[in-house]
Image (cartoon, rainbow, N blue to C red):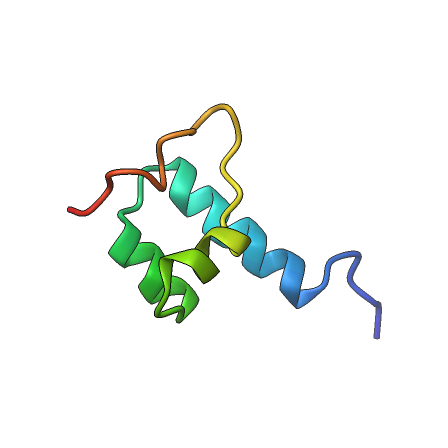
Amino acid sequence: MTRSPFTLHQLRHSRLTHAAEQGASTPMLMALSGHTSVRSLTKYAKVSARGPGALAGRDR
């Protein structure tokens, strides 16, 4: 079996970050991550300069 160059932890970060950059709402990101706290969510979703507002004010 070939070892992947990525860990599950890295894939989790990546998935949440891409969802945030694509405009996912905070409740959606929390549902995807399983987090119940926005503070813990922000540790996983690191938004780049392309989507700086993705975690702010997205309560739709």
